[in-house]
Length: 274
Image 1 (cartoon, rainbow, N blue to C red):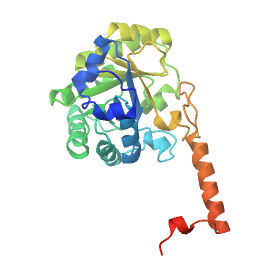
Image 2 (cartoon, rainbow, N blue to C red; image 1 turned 45 degrees about the vertical axis):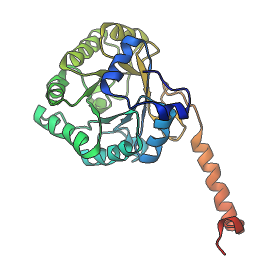
Image 3 (cartoon, one colour; image 1 turned 120 degrees about the vertical axis):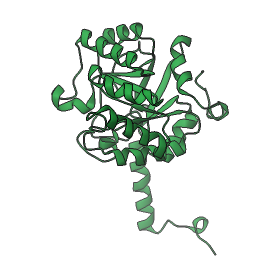
Image 4 (tube, rainbow, N blue to C red; image 1 turned 90 degrees about the vertical axis):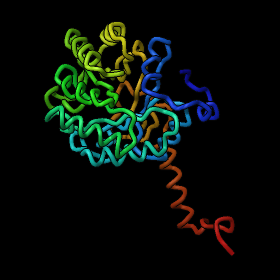
C-alpha cells in the first residue's frame, strides 16, 4: 500500500482493508490518518489520499463545542459515522467507541461495535484503554469486528488523569500496548507520550502504532482535521501542526459576502435568472 501523490491517483487505488492497513508496518509504509465527521469533509480527505478516517469522539469539542468528549452519545457517533462512510470510497473508516459504550460489559461493547458496522457502515472501531479494555476488545474481535486500540493519554479518562497530560510511565504504557495487541487489535493509537516511549512501543509491537503527540517513530500519525486545517480556535495542541488557516479564509469569505449583500453587489446578473 503506497500513499498516493495526487487526487487522481487516489481515486484509482482500490479500497484499503484492515489487513492492508496492518501490513503497512512490515512494508515500512507510514500510515496517514485524519478525523472526519461529515460527508463533505470525508470525501475531500478520501480523495487527498489518507489511509483511514477516524470518526472521533473529539466531535464533542470541535463540532458540538463541549469541554471534552464525555458527553458524546452512541446515537450521535452512529449518525456521524454514517455520513463519513458515505463520503469515503477508498480509505478505511474507523468509528470511536464513545464514553460508557463499552465499559459496562463485553456484551455491551460487542452490541455497540456491531451498531457501527451494521447501521453506520464502519469497517472498524476504536476502543480506549489498555489492560482494562482487554475483555471488551476480545469480545468485539471475537465477532470479526476489527478493533484499533488506544493507549497513553486516553481522553475519556480526563478526570482520573487530572487533565490532558503527557503520560510518562514507560512500564505501564508498554504493558497496555502489548495487552491490546494480544487481545486482537489490528493497530493502536499512542497519544501524548515521550518520543522514547513511543519508539519502544513501536519496536515491541507487531501491529502498527498510530501516533498523536508521540513523536516521529510511530508507524503512522493521526490528527484532528479541524486542528491541522485551522478550523478549531478554542484549543491548539502543541503536537498539532497547522497546515492551513481555513478558519481565517472562511471568516474573510463570509465578511465579503455580508458586505456585498448589504451593498447590493450580490446577487448580480450572473447569479440571477431572466
